[in-house]
Length: 365
Image (cartoon, rainbow, N blue to C red; front, side, top):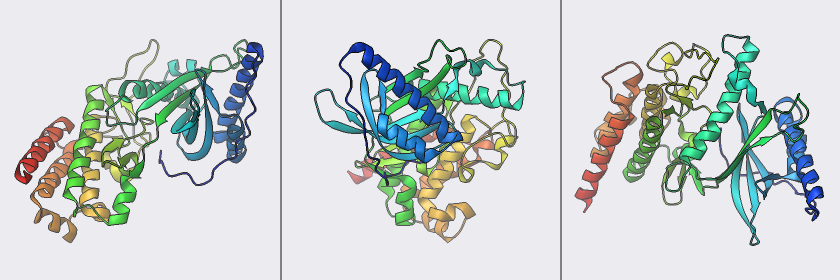
């Protein structure tokens, strides 16, 4: 999922909320039916019409209403919107809302030995539930992730209709981070080798974020420069758990999990090892995240040249600033992690970067 600045504001035509409790309940049910229909259309119908419908009704969870102002992006499992939250005391605040593709909660228990359609349904349902749980666990104050403000697994309002009673939509309300994504920052500057302080800060916070996920038993599986937001204080935040996977999947009753096979693993190719589909050290493993972090550090140091390996840009980095030379060494070892069991992992990289940062601060003092 790629977050970007809004480009096409949507007019809102929301009606006043009824005062009568029964009328409010009926309005909520109607709005939720419209939400399910609109989100189905985002994938299988007219996306523009779906967005127009959402712009008229907005989203209400736990009594809090959010007007959707702009569509920011869509991935395999969810769509992201800029929204305005109507504060109880008056006024509004800007937030980011991720709304999942509708899914049947029973699908997560389908066997992956079934048909291709069953496997796709099972994968989608598990991923929706997993991302919802991870954002609640990791998106706390002070974390290197987007802060979770609210969230709800919304049931279909027609709960007496067996065809739709188990349908769910996951809604996550996240803080809007003012800043720029790392990809845009690198594009503007060519590379960040002239800004060792920024490289050091981003390297530290990114490895800290991934280390937190690994210690929670989760791999991110989609680390790349568009997933990193640099805020106004130059803090780096890692976004989007949409492709995250458990390192050791919890075994639900009646569910068989298969190892990833070639052609079935999603992600961003430039930050994904070639062996991702058929190497047990890559796939959805901590080594895959380590590889991606190493490639991302190289992207900061070399700019677009990181795609073509060693060149004059790399030589300049390796003969220049000591801090950047050390970061380059760490990045190179991380990139080898999917093939070499002796290469450093994320936890070891974080230890080395922390020591390097402390040493640099002592020298500066």
